[in-house]
Image 1: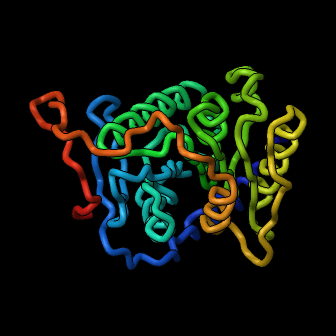
Image 2: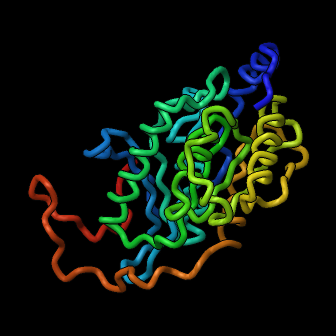
Length: 276
């Protein structure tokens, strides 16, 4: 990763509060906040009202950037309408080490994020019929750190990686994933024409890094006329273009009687309804 002059970092800080969530919030059911009893991480979950246990649903796991300018709640709100329109479940965990303004994606935080994300996928997969062949990991801004780190380390879990105006740090990533990961995933990196200079430089560095290591990375895309803005619809289009056939081992029907969970609670056939 190229060194970024501190004045450019200050300019990035100045535009960071300008990361609103302009996407449509008019979904038929609400997102909800929950906490993983295993990892202790809070997370936001959205399950569309069209969810049916008999049909496996693709999963989107989305990583937030620098708090307080970008948090998990922003991500569930930017994705929920797209998820409703495309029959996807969305998981937006609360993460650490995602400060893209002065941070660099420290390995200890990325390891914790990996544990949390994998635990949450397991937990959500226990409650819902997840299409395990089609799970996208995506991040915005500082959320690029866990998207690269966790995504490249788990190519058999994440079929698609989408980096949206993301930070990238080669030095905290290199050597932490298997070289065999190359070619197993569809990867896309894009950013805005008027994104801050550090985002442009690091996006280009991430693109070159993956291409030089034989990863299946799509040609870089610069979205004209925008700055550091949320464009999840571009990632959704890429996800749909790379959907795979569901794995045949997945259940076709809900169990007649759900097994008991720890604490004596049985997992309900959740319809996705709930309060925010």
